[in-house]
Length: 292
Image (tube, rainbow, N blue to C red; front, side, top):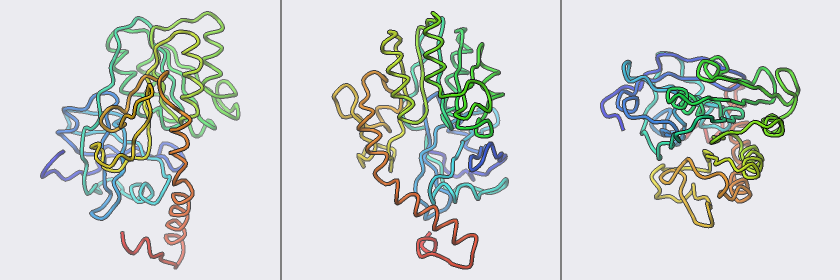
């Protein structure tokens, strides 16, 4: 946690529709952040706590980079913060740092906004001297983010889009399946993205005998393991993503349970977001907005 620091936004970029990058002053977090770790932020004093993986850190300038996708009311409020604005609070770095395995060849598979938390892994493996193959995917060309940054720390970059507007038409697991079918072999894999994507990738790497790390994103409230909201089942045991992860052995994760829990508040989140956007665009001011 950074005390007495104004968490000022020194840079804001819109990466894609409803996806934003914030570079924020947080010197103590920047000094200690490792790949895979995250922070919990609040847009204002009465806001909900939102967990965000650290996409980049600059200890010299005391800043961290966070990528936010508007999904609900809380993330919509964060998206309204502009350059020069401030976060009410940033706590972190939280979670266990990702284990950067000592390997010759690694494959990194990222889908959607999963490209952002994958960047620190790519940098770390690139710096270690490993040959880095990165596969990134999105629904459309316009939804691909941070491609230049990924290319700068990868030896090979392969792209997939659902509609075929860039790269291979299909999903990231299709690209990985083709590589493996062509005889490519990797010492380790890291996969970050939607749970259904990670499940598909882990099915392929399990069959190929490639150890695989995934980063899980269950519902999270306090980030300290006290609320129990982020519990996941790994290897038949209950784990808490905020303190035991978020990185886990992908071959041991119960993805079906994870996906079921992620959908639990899906309707409420959508209704909250729609109501908030309606209140901002028209004269109606909903009761949820009035209480923060």
